[in-house]
Length: 171
Image (cartoon, rainbow, N blue to C red; front, side, top):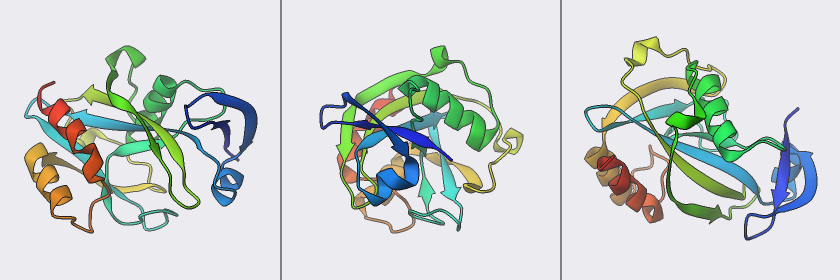
């Protein structure tokens, strides 16, 4: 069972902790992280979400997840990389990018922090968390930008976040 902190619309902790499913059912704002993983070729790693995922199953997405109760955003980002890809990452390797963003969606409202991690590992070295990820692939950043602009249904990304892809092109 996973527990998360409730936050207000400014990202401040309210002091309430609840089970993740309860936060979703009650549509409670809670913290999340998104990690842009880039390599030396300025490609971004996307993962294909499992068909078992509650939201956006079988679509390409950036790595991300929930921040557990009493966990820092950076700790959550490093933990998600370890869980989903099987790679240990130091928090010092995580570069904060962009601005904090509130994402209000029915039964899935988050306040996100965004990070970038430079990684030159071959995708065959990753140990995927099969419950959440079925495949990973390096994509050209401009290709991903075009998929988002063209509203491709096979990828999860918002046009409002295109500026983050522009940022990572220069890291």
